[in-house]
Length: 342
Image (cartoon, rainbow, N blue to C red; front, top):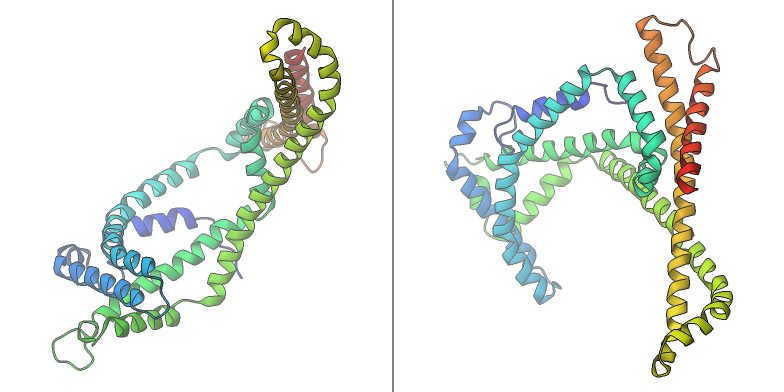
């Protein structure tokens, strides 16, 4: 499969922001005409409610689900109206943001981001771990996956708009409004979706999204489960010496009728200390990780910017200056951390 063009976010958002209505898609559909079709929108809302009623009438559906589906019709109608009104505004905002982003100096922004990551990344342990896990586990594919899914959604909307206008028997009445039952309407719309959607593309897109987000969840789960396990181990091994040292002191300070609280207090204190030490170690590790990644990123981006401006003629591939500068930033950050701990 070919990779999406680099201008996809801007062109895609510009295309969507030019649509005055989410439902006004399809060839030969003037925007003003769709804005004035209030009756058409009402008929579409009625079809949505009929589809929900048909789902509720299917055999084997639990009673509570039937009631939920019946009540879901008006909610879906409201939701579609909200999407209809908000999509052009959201896409216009995204298109403007992408256009501004495309005018900014990328190397300078990357260098600035690397410096921020190097010197402040340790303060955002969870965010850094999530971003890195997302990048490693297929984050670059997410844009293509979203584009594929949106393509199928748009195709279904176009096909649905065309199907709602069909009058094959030329009697002046829309075919979808002449269906004998709600089940017939449901079957017609399900068949339309199955004929329009590309199953291979949807499965690959959903798989790519699942892979990216599952990688984030798995990484966070493993990383912080390790931190919790370390905290529990520290508290368990700290319990015996803390009991020997603190029991006499607490017994002397606490009245005899409350001595049964001495052991729980010591256990809770050990757990708090263990969690604090474990998170401190996790933060130190995250700080080292962020300083290495951010320092090298800032140094390489700065060297690329210097080459673009003509200040130097040395590239990253031909020199070790970027590694030297990056590791220097990492060491400087490490000195700051040591001074803060001391």
